[in-house]
View 1: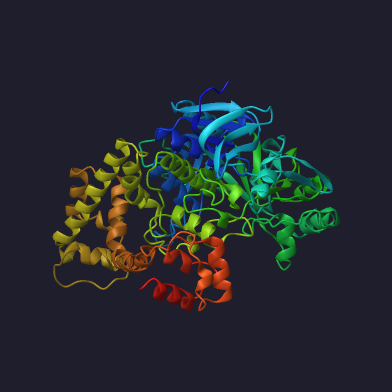
View 2: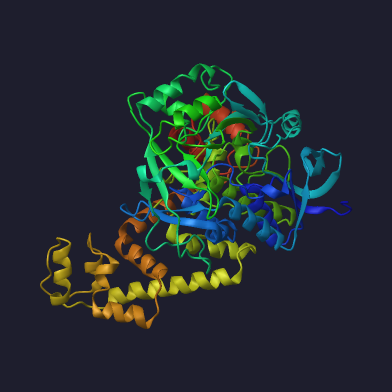
Length: 622
């Protein structure tokens, strides 16, 4: 069946696996995607949505690199929102509700149209390793498939154990069996493994809900999209709704706490801090009488509904009784109860920044196997692992994004240098350069880099260059063009800004707080320029941000450039820190374990102090 050797084998067909396979294949590697069920490629295992705070920036970055997540999100979206518009542009985050079935279908079709991707449905329960190098995989039927690199994206399937109340059974997802064999083999190789937990809420019949009692949650009036390419834009949207738990719901849920695997000791692993179960919320926030419940449709035509905010592993009878007491859910019918799942992961400090393992060459980990949570975090690791697997086997330089270049760079650097003992989730607060890492400029930051390594296609680069050119020219127009005080003062009065007495350049008045692009478009010179040059919304947005936040952007860029100097100071591979007696014991221990590649990376390791960095700099002659 498999007479020839593949370049890259990707194990797992979730968000990480799908992006990894697409990236490797689109760069020219003959790629095999092996998954236990070909019908669940790109499956949204939890909520039917993509993006959100910081996660939306990641999807834009994946798209800018030439990945598929943004395009597929646009094709299957049923609602779009730009979150945090009341804050500065560094905080703006796109989010889409999706049609779950269409999302998975679009992923399957996109991969089938990717010429160098082959598919095989079976469980992989072992790796083929020669010396310290992976050379393929072995399936549960005993089929050996050879390859030059392997990317593991096993999600929650490694020894997955599902909990509903006091019931537990093996599984990687509801209705699907867990994967065995890989953890045991990797620990034999010397890898450290751990256990993590995640959960999901009940799915219910939307026909049994009373939406008239809930608060409507519509999409944006003029919805945007994720992909920087010309892709599907929403013409109509489906509403979401919001309701709340109450004290009665909380009391009913507490009746099942003695049967809760979270509280009776059955679950010992740590769950996601920022997406707690409903029982955890009641326990941790005992002073709160209610919690928000978001009622999210699963698609255009299905009646299935996702009950966001009610993640639980309580017994199914308790779930049902409590949910019936939520306003609007009085007549609720369950499709399936919520559950928790425990699974194996491997602390990511065992990886290089390319996501290649330190112990086994050409073996890459991506997604929840690295201790992350979320579709977007997984997909971003998948595309980076796919890229680097292709580059490594073709003896090219690795592709590593720095912290000032992408949220993806922040994510991977956090995992590699700090590790994680709980499911890692991306937030804007994790990025020290978030003014640079905005959702609107992901293409400007990343498309040229991706084009250079052979992933992003020329159409992306052309579109990006056109946007960049038009934005820069528009900014220059504001710098060169003067305003008439009689025309500008009514605008300044509207925003309670001091009037001007004489003419000056538009850039100066546009930079004032409260003055927006919509205000400037009231000026005839500006509106004529926009119409004549056919400027679209993306160009207007980019120009406005560059004008209004020029000082902040320049300051952050300057800080990033200073720290970049430390990034350029390389630490020799397998450096013996034990001979530096001036290092603290903790720093020596952490540095020996993680083996940072640069001084900058070493400085971000928990337990390595500035004085330890000074010792290293002195030793390096700096």
